[in-house]
Image (cartoon, rainbow, N blue to C red; front, side):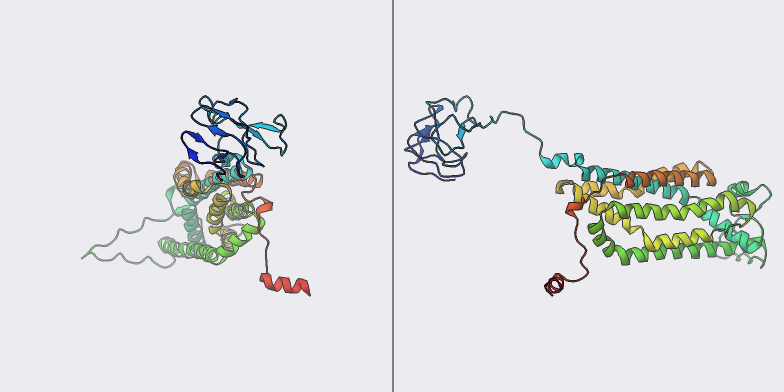
Length: 374
């Protein structure tokens, strides 16, 4: 922006000069614009190309509509050609693009991913509440050689004639004699051993999943930049769904008919595979990256918190819902919720569209250039 000619002062623009707040070029030519007179007068023009103002005898009154001027984009002196009107500043403001992020495909995909994440955690908590007593009963039955229930409610689900583990002895205090150990081969001894075996398996599965999540986390982030976010979120949901299916099969068949179909060992195997191929860290990585893909920077914090609150939502809703039904129904509810979450993710737009994805490079860029030259 430039002032050519006279000086800015005295309530107007003097002597053939105009401070070009409209034109990006230098303003010049005979005449000027008088702010005190309330209009544009003189013989010059304002042009986005040549930078001169055409007052037209004061046609645009600065006092009534100070933001309205006549702009000539043509290089000729004909004022009737290529005339554009700059709208008044009193017109309603248009919404900024950042405020409409949720209307774009990537924004819709982010919202659906957050919803699918919450549904997934509800399903996980719905079956996790019932898994420990089922696991304890499985190992107690395997050790004792007869159907054994770890809790009374589970005993009723197995069969009214199934054995129930006796309650554990009360903890000892100072001065009290320790409770005698259970006899080897007794029901109490089998129930004690079942706790140790179940804890070993469950902690091992958890350690494998978290360990591979730590190792594969950077690679998952890079691959999601290349192939998109939704594929990896879908991989996580499918892996968790595949692990709960054998658990539901055992609950509906093996618990009442004995340890048939391998008992819970197919569940343990699928849980290990799920921990290796689709660890829980995929969820956190994909959601955090999706927020960066779809939302403006000013919305990063609350959207990231909303995505991470899915576990708390599942803990509240899933645990309450699962505790009000029996084990078999809880597993069916979990499977149905997993199917819903998979459908949402499968048919949702990706937060990272193909035109914004990276290219997977196996070699440094300079080595690839050298190979292309050869």
